[in-house]
Every structure is written in structure tokens, then in C-alpha cells.
Length: 528
Ligand code: TNX
Image 1 (cartoon, protein in one colour):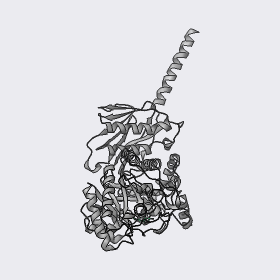
Image 2: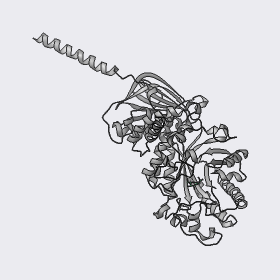
Image 3: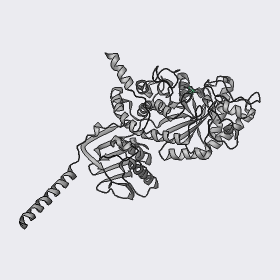
Image 4: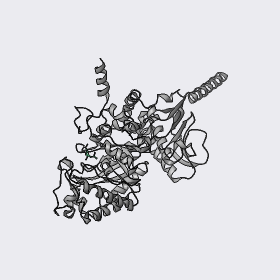
């Protein structure tokens, strides 16, 4: 009897051992090539196995770098809500041999530059290496997209977290990959801007240009000219109460963006698009009288008086305060649609403003009209509609940022039934937003002339985050891929299927996107 019991327990023990070790080795076979990574990486090699992220996984950073530790914590914080795992983040000198995510700065080949990375996933470890922290950060965004889509959920999910193994090598084709948000026509709160920054970071964008002033509202506190925000910031399109960022809030946005490797470019539009300033200070007007606040959506009716000394004192103060608050290298001075400023006034005005920007240690960016002025070598022209202006800019040795309205303007309607948005540059559907190559866009402008691309969202008709997301997504994902991925690796037919798969992830992220199914369906119907 006793012997029988003994045999039973031995058999049971053996069974338990077999079963547990079997479940240990039994990791699903997974194919990294099936994963959708947007923007598409330079190379992906699959090794057919899987790695399991679990409660015991540790995040190691190589060395004592505070910045890498911060990135490690960013990753741990990202992983926590959906998994419930509280991953430890630690410094180390060597890669631990199992169940870890290892972040390290190492010397990668020169093509990886500042932003490239290598991501290696084995069945035991994940390692991300790069020449600099921004590369590690971008590698984390790729790792994020390889994790099951439920990782984007805000609450704990009941599931295991296997990811496909393999190796990814990746780096961008353009150094400047941006979005612009017009917070003047409708004001967006600090929390909204941060939310937008988080969304941009997923797709490896690295610039957020804030359009901080226009006819309808002045949105950044300037301590030496307080009425700009007190009065000039008090309304918006449609007559709402507007708003503005205090300098403290603006600094807070910058810090938040910096932690996501995004630089903020502040724009103060001039000499046109200045009604909010003209309404706040009578002395800036030729008439010496303040204008009325404006809440409509017409463009091109206002101008600073380019012949008054006070105008340059005003711009000097604004650019100085902005430069002091902005660690990034650029100040954007607008310069577009100055329809009521004579060209003989416009050119010397832009020249003087350029001097002011340079004297404050910054590089000037302006919309393509600034190409009429005498551009200094490091000034940058942002193309939006004037092909000739862009070409003139290149002749004057400027670099260009590409924001072609008929491809990148996120305020253009998708089609004739889109409720939000405008259509002066035509409809911009998901395909036309994606299917173009920067270096083939403008005759005479080649890849080396192009700093990068930027997607502006003008907000005449956009009043809140739901509306913003609907116009931005998914078009901006295509723009992000244009900026990052070599043209030779991009193809609409391949992209549209990857994008379609990715939409489920956007849904879990809680992003209110436009469903391009409408487009896929229409294409289908057209074929039939
Ligand atoms: C043109 S693009 C503008 C903006 C408008 C936008 C609307 C540019 C440099 N100026 O003032 O908001 O069109 O799409």
C-alpha cells in the first residue's frame, strides 16, 4: 500500500516537472515580419521565436546615465497600466542573461546618426542600442508597436505579453519631422498639447511647431507687453474665451516635449496675421488706434506698421523673451499672407526681423514668402504653397521644410463629405497624404536642400481634441513615414494594409481617427 502511494507521488512529481518545464520552453513561434511598425524601419530580420514580457522582466540601463535611467522609467511607466507589472529599472555594466530589457549607448555605424537604433529581441532578452538617447527613445517606440496592441490600454488586461524575436536596424531619412498646431484660431490647453506630444512621439516625430499668434488670438505671455495676452488672448474664432500659456506653462510644455525628444518651435506670425497684437497696443498701428478683436476666419487683412521704430522694439522684446524660454535652435516668424503690406516694406521688414532673431542666438524659420528677403545662410524657408518662393529660397542657400498644403495640411477635408476643415487646397485623402516623395516634389529642389517635412493643423474649424484627432489621424502617420523611411522602401499598397491593421491599436489608444475604410471601400466600388 505504502509503496503504491510512493509510486503515485513519484509519478505525480515527474508529471508536474514535465508539465512545468514544458510550459517553460513552450513559447509561441512568432514572426517579426508580421508586426506593423510605423514608420517602417530600414531593416527587419525575423528569427521565428518569442520573448515574454512578464512581471519579473527587468529594465537595465548601461552605466549611470541619468538620462537613460529616465528613459528606462518612461518605458516602465508605459508598460504598467495594461500589464499591471511594476518593472524595476536599474543601472548595470553588463547585459544580464535572462528576462531583461537592456538599453545602452554604443558606437553604431555613422548612418544610424543621432536618432537611429538597433533593436534585438531574443527569446531571453531585448536590447536597444543607439549612438544617443534619442535613438534609444525611438527604439522604445518600435518595441512598443511590436508588443500586443492591448499594451495601449489604460487599464489592466488579462493576457500574456509575447513578442516576436529578431533584429531591427533603423534610422531616419530626414532630420526634421514635425507637426504644427495652431493654438491661435482656437486655443488648446496645456494638457491637450501634452496629449498631442505623446501621440507624435509614437511615430518618431521630433518637432512640434506652435503657431502662437494670429489675428484671432495671442497665446504666449510676454512680460514686457502684458496686454498681448490680457486683451489679445481673450477670444478666439467664433467668440469663445480663448486663453494663453503663461511663461511657466510654456516651459512646462517644453520640458514635457524634451522628455520625448521633441523640440518646440514657437511662431509669432508677422507682419500680417497680427490683429490680436494690433488690438492690444494702439501704438503698433499706422493710425495710432487699436483695432477691434477679431473672431472670424478671413486671412491677410492686418499688418504691423513696418516703418515705426516701436514695431522693432516690440519684436525685439517678443523675440528676446521667447528665445530665453526656448532651448531649441529655432524661432518661426511667420511672414505669410501679408497681403496688405507693400513688397517694398515687406522685404526690409523681414531683413530686420532676421537680424533680431540672429542677435538672440536663434535660427529663423518663415513661411515661403520670406524668400523675397535677403536670407542669411542658416535661415529656413517653410514651403506651403509658393513653388517659386521655395526655389528662390534654395537659390539663396536656405534649406526648406516641406509642408505642401495639398498633401500635408491636416485642416484640409478628406473628401466632400468631411464636416470639419477647409478645402482651399483641395481634398487630402489618406492616399494623397501618403503617396508623394519629398525630393521629387519641387523642380530644382533635391534631397540635400530639404531639412524635412511638417504637417500643419490650422484650427479655424477645429475646436477640441476629438476634432483634432479626427483630422490628424491617420494622415499624420503617413507623413511620419515619409519623413523617416527611405522613399525606396515605401509603397502605398503595402502601407495601406499596414495602416489598416494599425487602426485597432489607435482605437485602444483612444484616438478618434478618421476611418479610411471609407476610402478602401470606395476604391473597391470604383473597381467593380
Ligand atoms: C493659410 S498656410 C494660412 C493660414 C490658414 C490656412 C488655412 C499659411 C502659412 N497661412 O493662415 O490658417 O491657410 O488652411
